[in-house]
Length: 126
Image (tube, rainbow, N blue to C red; front, side, top):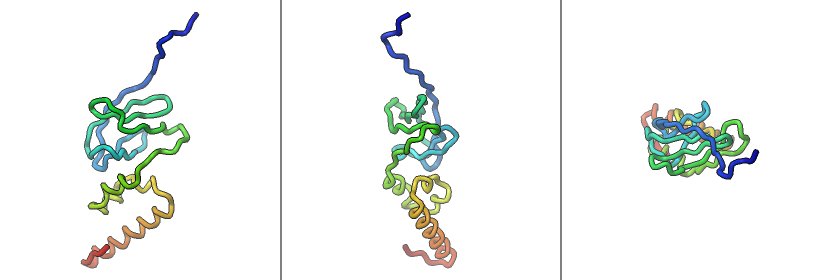
């Protein structure tokens, strides 16, 4: 028996809606997709080793490794922080801190505490 000449590519296509921070639920994990807006509907194309995030025109926005594949997730930290620049309190509710190294996480946690203290005292300076 001979193998077919046309390759069969198996995938699952699923429509999801991003949350208020531009994050989507992929394999029971919330992942930030920098190129989408909050509450935007996107398509997830699940392969065996990756997940492609597609827009309405089925163009690939970003390709992420599946949860069980031990690969780093490519991220653009500047894009992640731009969305939080005007809303520093949103850092508490976003999953952005998961992507930072330990030293930067500590800095943001200390900075959040400083902002909270200054707001409760009635003055705020950066």
